[in-house]
Length: 423
Ligand code: C6P
Image (spheres, rainbow, N blue to C red):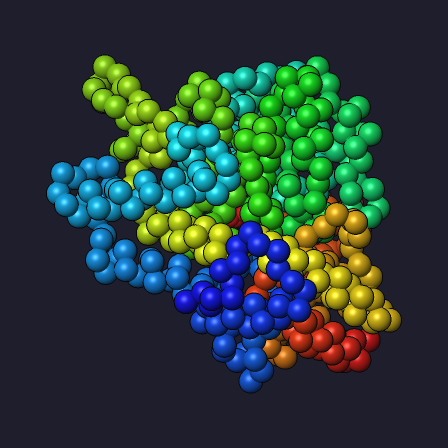
């Protein structure tokens, strides 16, 4: 499995060992060895979803082969075993993000469901027609549309923090927009389209100074950097398993226990109740109050394996190697004559959005695919951001710690070819 050299977790990783470690970790990802259109796969669509290491795949398989049963329901041994595995994954996730208690870890289908849960269960009962929800121009649709739905239900207004041309938040404008009417601030930690790392500590501090709660969309943060919700002091934090090397269909909503406790359930059904009668129902304790119905048991257990994997590889290596990938890619891509970068924040994750001359991003993406290179093209579920830049979309190369410098060279030469074909 994970090679010996990788088990240096929090130790300092020396520059010259990075390439060796990458070689080792790549062996953990079976999908990376295949060819696409006759060329070795170069997977640069990690912001959409990341690939899965063998340890995650094996944990999900072994759950189905040896332990599968429903959770929190049976006295029989299998059910108890499945319940133990499910709850062990919750504890793993709790430790991973530095939450105080497993009561604060709610399993959802993903970031999208987690944000909808906050909008409907936390915000809806508290908002009125004169309330405001403060978001930013660079939000993913998952952190816009739930608030627009809420706006339709309550009359509350969605207010948008503008950005500077380089793709950083206009913090002066944020400060001005944060007002007496603001009931909640909802902001991405890292923009999926621009790679910008937002100063969420500052945003939380300024919002809390006015007693305004903050929900962080952490979908693009957890694959790249350590997150400690206790230190951040955010009120809610949402993320998805599939972007952090875990299964699809599983995600997490962290919420402060006092807030979650005071919130009504999001959905009704099995497991979220204490007792049901036709004269009324009482609800289960946290976090089960928010997990109606049979959950994604295999996905949750797989998410636990993904956390174990990340912790074994270590953020020290992940951050060093990804910083090197980003700098190298930016420098080599800059040599392309017709390239225009969208978003150039100094603080950014390994995500690069660009346009190639006046070629449509889809055409560029299709040419790259012919050469075995997977990038995402289009609006990346950030249409308001694309409108802001007055572009239909971008080509987006997003890196994970298993990408290599050689793959950046392949991307650059494929883009040269694309430019000569399309322009
Ligand atoms: N972004 C991308 O290609 P879900 O689909 O619920 O797992 O995650 C939604 C989501 C929310 N916030 C941010 C910042 C995101 O990047 C995403 C997912 C993918 O950029 C798919 S659209």
